Image (cartoon, helix red, strand yellow):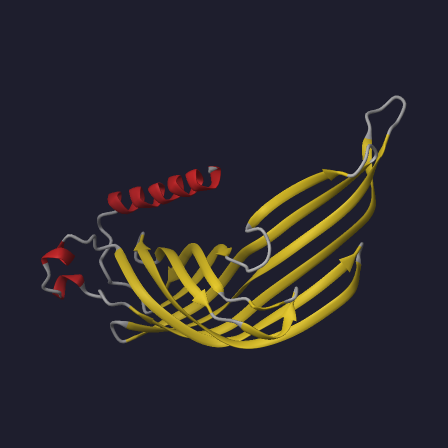
Length: 241
């Protein structure tokens, strides 16, 4: 609930900036841009987000599980191809990690008690990709479209459709303490369709919301799973130049 409230406040702030910034030209912008985004990937195994669980095994021992799953990030470069199309080169990925720590309670006579680590282990999956895609802006020049519905659409909104293809790389790694005990690597060719929205804050600064569904089937299982297909929702900024 707190995450949803924070997201609502953040989007409201961006919308307020857009409403006040009335001098933004609809699609008068440079032809190239770089994009930085962060978001969540609906991983097939693991708890989405960051969570911590404690379990008391007995009076003196405690088991702590820390999940960091589905957090993603991406970087991309795009270049306009005419008025409605652009090509995009993107790199990104996500992680699905689970850490387990077993600790024992230590009592001291004149100080407060504390827990001493007996064992710690981590099992992580990292997935990255390098993609080449195409972006299509169907409403590139709103002022030239004869439609009463589109006449009321704010000029700083720039929706788009996108699709891409490229290789995915997956690592399945286990740590005991600080030592890697097992590691597997797998590759896959995959693709994504998607939709997005650019909100023009200025000629060179753009707020971006993006939704893509990645189709991935690895050659070898990672965490006993080969199909890591799923939606990826991100938000971030573009710098146009």
